[in-house]
Image 1 (cartoon, rainbow over the protein chains, first blue to last red):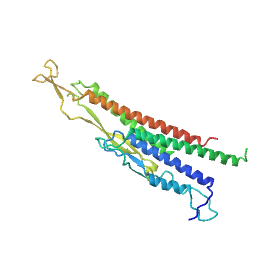
Image 2 (image 1 turned 135 degrees about the vertical axis):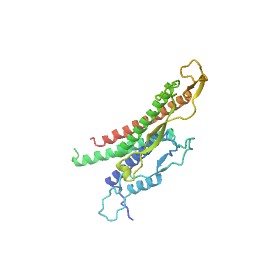
Image 3 (image 1 turned 90 degrees about the vertical axis):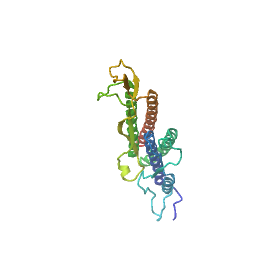
Image 4 (image 1 turned 60 degrees about the horizontal axis):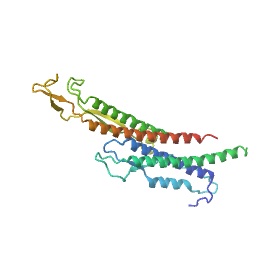
Length: 135
Length: 143
């Protein structure tokens, strides 16, 4: 399937949007894990990385089947699958949540979110600049 | 945005559950010597039962990242035997001179309380992180 060699604004924005939703999904999963820190038998969850990567890469390079196609988003936002995390031993009550790990994940995805947001804001500024005829 | 709001409500559910744990631990500590509870018998140690609670949202209906909150399923009485102490002059002493004291171990309650307050702090940190994200995403619309 041919892909367009030049990444358009729409493609960049679509990829950034995906980064934002992935970071938000990670936050939701980590905050679920933290909330269940004291629940006996709870197994820590994580965002299914492989699936997230597929969606991610699929978004950065859109298939163009016609020369006049515009790049754009195609999926439903925020549809990330979760799975049970295999890292970390269970405590005596069967709970596998580790506070430091979850807080680290939250901080990391907050940074990811901030980076993508900064880039997206810069893109929006350029678009606004173009709309306002360079004023 | 809506997923971030879900994350906040999940963390908030944990805050209220951990607060309940602290309240129960404190009331156990306070009643470590109560020989007359609400039913007139010796006070029994109370325990909080936590359970997962799916946060109902539009996203979970669409099969998005599932958000799992926590809720207090029940507050149960600890059924271990009461401590018996020999004190014939106590008004609640039985015919043999023994008084039944609550089945409370202060060290156990303190450990429970420290655990609950650490979990509370962790969830508060999570809310602060999410709040930063929400305010950043609001900045997207600004010039």
